[in-house]
Structure formats: C-alpha cells, structure tokens
Length: 381
Image (cartoon, rainbow, N blue to C red; front, side):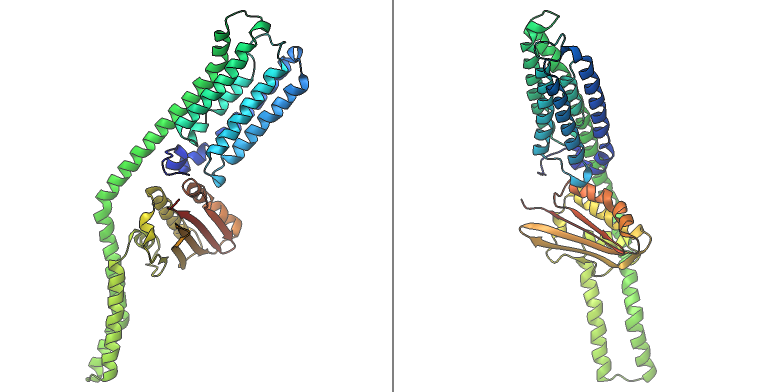
C-alpha cells in the first residue's frame, strides 16, 4: 500500500480488523433482499435465467469482497475495489435486463440498493476520493438504466426522475460511509498526535528507567568479573603479568558494554523494557534500519515484542530481531522461542500479522510448536 493512502485500515489496523464482520453481514442482508425482490418480480421477468444469474454474480462480488478484505490478506487494493464495484454493477445490470420491458417501478429493484450497501464499508479500506469516484460511476450506470426504462414503467415521469430515484441510494450511502471513515481517520490521527506528545513528555522517565537498567547491568558485570579479580589480588598481595592481562580483558569488556549502551536505539530499548532482563544481541541491525520504521510499524513491532514476553513459555534468550537491506527494502525477521503449540501461537499473533499487513504487503507469520517467526519489509518502492 502506498504511503499516501490515509485509510482507516492503514491508520488503525486493529480497529479495522474489528470492523471486518460488517462486510459479510451486509453481504448476507444484500442476498436476502435480492432474493426476496427477485421472487416479487416473478411476473415481471422477461428473462428469468438472467435474473438468477444476476444473483450469482452478486454473490460472487460479496464472497470476493469478504475474503479479500480479511485482515490476513491486507491491504485491500485498488484492483480489489474495482472488482467488487464492477461485479456489483454487472449484477445490477443483469437484473435490469432480466425485467426489461416488464418492470413496473424502479423503487423495488434490488440492484441500486445492493450497490449502495456495498459502498458502506469500502471507505474503510480505500481512500475516500477513490470511493466517491467509484460511487459516481455506479450511480451513473444504474441511473441511466433506470431512465431508459421509462416507457415500460407504470409511473409516468421524465427520465431525470427515474435517474434520481435509482442513483440517489448509491451516492447517499457511499457518502455516509466516507463520512464515517473520515471521522475515524481524523480521530486516529489526533490520537496518534496526542500519543506522540505523551511520548515526548514521558521520554525522560523512560530514559531514566533505561539508565537504571544499564547501571544495574554494569554493576552485575563488575560484581561478576572485577570484584573477584580485586579480591584475588589483595589476598595474594602481589601483581603478576597475568593479573595485568586479566585487568585489560575486564576493562575491554566493560568498555564494550558502555559503547553498546551509548549506541542503544529505540528498538533495543523497547526489547530491554519488555523482556525481564536485557537480551544483549537480540537486535541485529548493523545499518540502523529500524530508525526508518514508520510510527505505525514501531507501535506494532513494540506490541509484538511485549506480547511475546508476556506469553507463557517465552524464552527471553531466544528473542531475535534481524533487520537487513534486501532488494532496496528493509527486511525484518522477528523470532522467539515459546513453549506452546503452533496453532495456539498462530491464534495469539494473528492480530499482529493483520496489523502488519495493513502497512507491509509481504508480512508473513510462521507459527510452529515451540517457536514463532514474523517477517515483513518496509521502505523503498
């Protein structure tokens, strides 16, 4: 998905995940209404097989939309929207042709209502401008078809009236869906801004906590290496060449630890805060590509690390996050050992995969007994 597509699915992947059932539910409503309307048009059908075929095409549009908008195959692309709208308009046209010359009124035809209902949730997945353009196209098609049926309709009026009756539901529900998506996106962006401001305010406190953790780690290192060395020298009362070499080794170890702590970036800090003890070497990012992650990605990655650390059976020493440049993009592999069955791990981390797929088209999840691995790419083209 392109970075400039400010859709709810991209801005709030988890929230959009919870809204996904609306698609299948609305689809079921469409099929029930379309079937009922077709039965009510029995005596008006001039081509009955075409009417039933129209229902099958509409069902195909609903099934495709429901499957393609699932979070596990996110993001919902422009091509996906074209397919959904195209099939829905085709189904409506087929039904119109099936009653051509025998239709009495426009108001009880199911085509325009079905298309309108499909547009309710589309703005959650595609930019508002695209949805409005698609709704205008659909409204023009059903409106023109309705206007052309004028001579056979019982209610005599000018073609513009028939056009308006058929096109209005499509435009109205599309605009309603766009309005909801706009409010949702605006609220999400305001929340993100407030979160960033809170992060700035909390940053000193977080860094203080990280400093205490680093201090504790240094003291542990000194207690385990330097103190026994000094006690040994004092007990012997002499300093040998081996003691000097040993002192250099201890000093180098402390110096490496200090340099590592200075170079600690946000991802390592996130790991340090989430895992019970600092997992030194858990992050392998020689080119500091983690700094190029978007705010959404940083939040998702941090949530994955925190979730893994809280999962029963998690082995802190097994946590590994590797980031490397592959084909002009930053490829990330996150893995952890967790003593749990594969299906259970897949169920636990599936929401995070859904969130990742909203911002990274190649995100994958591999959950096996005792381990879980998540991969995704970002940046580049």
